[in-house]
Image (cartoon, rainbow, N blue to C red; front, side, top):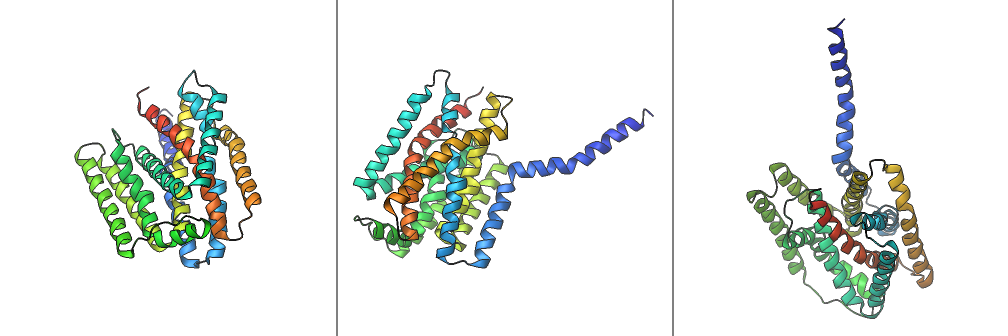
Length: 322
């Protein structure tokens, strides 16, 4: 009988092994599977712009924007002296100030938003891969290949859309310059990944992950329209990772914190952001999908500014030993 107990125990462990592997997959690679399914659906069905644009906008609004809806909780968790009312006031003031800048100087506001987003996307990507001793230029390089490169490669199409909605006009950039800059950024990021490995700031598995992510990003923007590729990356990589980072942080502070509670905490400010977008659309009533996309871009940009400033503090706090 004594010998049967270890046998039963081992059998139980073996039965649990598939469950453990499934959970590990969900934690680490489910987003890769989802982006593959999402991309394949669009690639093989080839829906027209009038079909995929509202789908992408809906996904960005419902799944992308909420990744910043827990900013108030992150702010409160960073310091015992945090003043939530003061933070919300600053958040709204920054958002309205940036929105006013859009109204006055849309071309300058757009350039600032691209630079800001480049930094934010690069920081999140490197933090998610747990790169050691992340520096400013590390962030700029990876933010450029994640966001700036695809924007440059699709510059002609995006310029037409922006110029149609604004009295300002972006400068022309020849096709060969766009391709040259895009390829140069990819090669720079690839070289930088190997330098990180040689300087022992990442391990071999992290190097493989960086190269894999670079390959995924390049493939997305090569085979899919810009908006579809951006939606895939924004939801299944950037927002997915941000949700994971926030929940893990909040759960490490409060052992009783659950995913259900996290979802409830996201609801309030997600609703406010989505309601603001709907109000903006009702006020200006864009008559094209391009116009609607531009207004979505503006709403995202004004909440990205305070969100990026907070996440810079957040990632610095995560890097400190507890």
